[in-house]
Length: 209
Image (cartoon, rainbow, N blue to C red; front, side, top):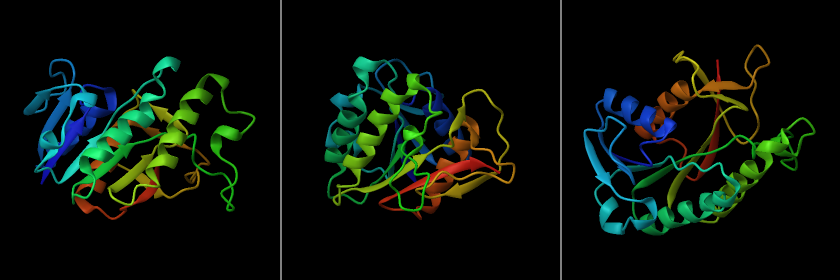
């Protein structure tokens, strides 16, 4: 299986590259800077400069784009739209590293995590930008997409446990009442979805078991 990891130099991107290569997948990293991901195959190219030809032949493209500075937040939608346009009408699956703010907290799906009183103000612009990107992605019937939201507490440096629970559109808690996942477990679970491909045109989510 051939996998492209776009923005492979990021924290999640690097871990996805490592997990995918460990699983025996043929991985190519794409990033605008020099290769820092450990990808055996690498193309130095900005995401917005990618063309359809760059992504031909891949079974799965992983979108590991991330932006946190407020002026850059619209690029969540712009970058995802660009990748969708490149993959439009193909069989190549697109797996998106998403956010938790857009997960629902009620069965009616009228309230989201980012709407809650306790949601940090500092993260609201990012959550809104990622939520907008997801809303736009849902309209793309021409792309074989999957959007994976982490748990509410997404921990960059926490260790890999190898144990997680898959959820759907709603915020899922583990048996301890926690909504937590490490980047390492998230990357491992994402690679599981790469291999199994069970959630086409769905948003799914993760929490540590």
